Image (cartoon, rainbow, N blue to C red; front, side, top):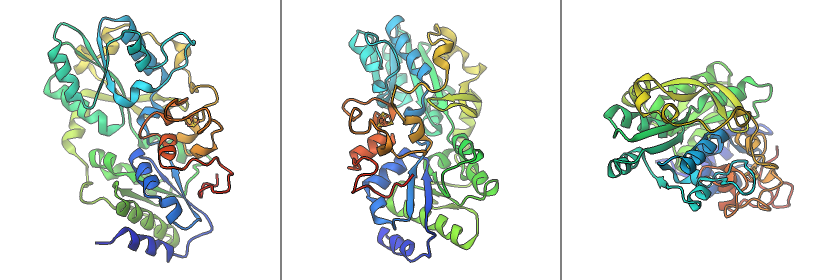
Length: 373
Ligand code: SF4
């Protein structure tokens, strides 16, 4: 087996260009990279850029606001993945700005770890409507689809805020300034949707790409592959996570998604509407669609793009335009205990990962890691 040290030695032996920017689009990848200290271990001319890989960070403000208001104003139980409870929205000081604050004001808000747990809570409370705020990328949306196909209790409703990852990368690549030279594609998404979903990066844009898992070895293998592609002038989508990622992906999971949801244009917090980047429940799930059966509290003004808290640069962080430590609030006003923006809340948010991983020096400091913008 090729060890991480072996992969590092191979990368160091490559005739690297002066500057190479490799983007990842998975919070799990960013966590593995940061915790393993890869930014320090790799040659300084390789820059590792965290990209749009945090579903909590891009969940539109209007959906979180809707969940908060449903919890406060309707006689329901509101369930959400744990990270989502602390994500703030922009409201007047006295109002609940997170689901956690709504709970403190008396709302029945509970964290869950899976759709199965949501169904269990609904069965245990048959006389109360239970709303599951299902926010996430393909990997967390597919289990919600599976649950809907299998059948859910009559009193369980889904407030869906699902997103697809590849359209955000397409948005970057279609811009004048993609900001990266190679891509490490998300292995867990490829497991569900199939690695072919990332072919466009190579075929349409000529950017080297490789699918990676979460181990240091898999990530370094993917980086080595993309670097060799760059140096040798070859382009192909490499699969460096073959033990899990198979051609075509998980057909059953895809079928579940197809049976229960449609793909739609969708708003990404701070970024705006990205074409074909969201999941919406289809007609077959109407009986369990919270958006059909409960009032809409978010108004048009709240649906506008650019609703990060004042001073928060999460949108730029998510798009890889800046590094977390280039936000002027990073580690000063904004820390995990009192987060300003969603990227400091979620375990998959780049700001929180960098802070937790000890990358705390502000950009420009003497001990700055290789993070030249
Ligand atoms: S450090 Fe805080 S305020 Fe700045 S981008 Fe990250 S989450 Fe937003």
